[in-house]
Image (cartoon, rainbow, N blue to C red; front, side, top):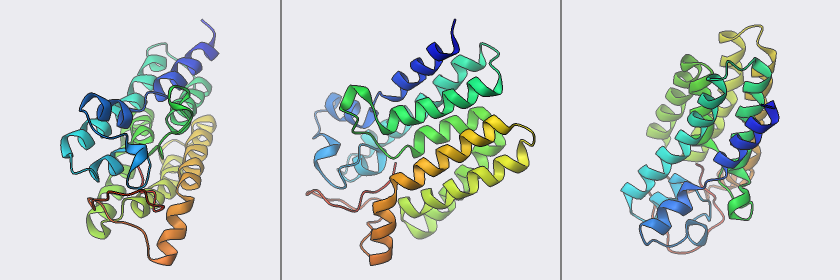
Length: 207
């Protein structure tokens, strides 16, 4: 089977927006219509429905895991692993099933990193959890974790240039998707984890 078929499958898996799917299944408002408008776990949490937020987080993380495990089972080389990692992340950010209105990619990227190397996943997750717990700002934790990811990958996986390139590209995409968050952080308008909101805002919390 052509490697590009696996890349396409990874993109389609990534395009399953669990924030929207879970919200519809639980009779909730579309997460793109309130809070930050971002279809991700952090914004779903703004609805006050913690179970929905948890299911969204699990679903988006498992997308990355499943896409990567499919190619790992094929004994894929670094190039295909790298392309798959990028494809599933891009699918989450620009999902074909939801008019290309996707999330920030943090949870999906986490699933990808754990499959690349569990140590890499643990380092990045630990950074995010510690910062999120202390600062209560999901976007800032995600941005710093994204900066840490390629550095950790460089030291943990020397010689795996394709993998490093993919991790670097994913990190760049995550930071780019948090551009508005950076502006809000500078202006002091960025929201904190768990804050409820009934109206559409520009703060764009991450997930």
